[in-house]
Length: 488
Image (tube, rainbow, N blue to C red; front, side, top):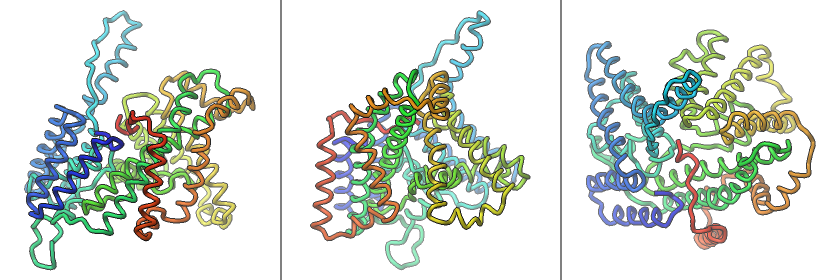
């Protein structure tokens, strides 16, 4: 069920209506679990069994880890959880990719091909798998107590606003919200009554409106130009490649952050706080800063459950560089079974390693007065974003030869302009939207637009929301486009 469809709007309003009418807290939480499963079933049909499998596996393994006295037994149980979750993810996401790679090798040896399994990628599997893994790891580390009921854990895993494409939830953040007391009493085990408050409603609706605006006004109307440029990348001029990189960079940000805004806004209306997943990433002043601002729930997950266990920066500089590249390689592979995602991840890994190398060689740069000035920050942003937008080429162009060509053109400029001017001439609307996006992005960097919008007088707030809706409908072609991160 896509967020940008009438079906979701009807579904969400129905959920709010039922929860508002029935105040019995046990019913509310069981109803939310049922609604979340219906939401997932609507999108994935029988593949909901995988979600149920992950839920049951980690609920019972988590309890067993917590009660186990022997450290060896705890480790065996954790390994069984990792094997079950990663095995499921690996099979559905990478089995056909692995078969195709084996066939490429054996073809030259005259060995018969292995038949592809033709597997369907279950929507959201990368996200809920990471959520349940973090749950069992935190229990193993002694930082979290297991869920007291299966229904509570099921809601954590399947919570519909963020189920399909994140943000990736942490049990330590979400579960306490379910257990909050209704009033100041000593009952600590009772589930929270879901009450829709005016402030949360207005903020949530405002955030959802901004999310729909990003996706349906910006991303979906910039996408045709990005597709036109990269559908046949051979022969592109350097400036055309750069234009395509900018277009796709804006598209994927508006698409993915738009989804996150809708998810966080919907959760806010229901009374749940989900941490922000984006924080103005195109104002990042370094590769490290970019990953503090882009897909924050994934970058912090990779830090806590991969980078630090690998040794982080505690085992010398050389090991730190290897760890950074390894983690980003795996982060790229997590995005999909394709070599272009691996290259994308490796590029980011190299960026992070090079930044670490430079700061190690020149520690005075950390306290450079120039880099803290307005001019220094602008230069840092421009240099950083030049390299960040170069990685979007690897994310967008799947063919290796075509990717090699566009990367070459992006770095080595040919200064040709005729084809680029032609692209500009018949893409006036997407170009205008890109310019408007950067203007609004700068305004949002200086001011919290959502907070300001939600705190307006009710009439002004309603007028602006109505204007946003009109702009969306004016460009809506009645064929909703899937969110990019649904593929992962």
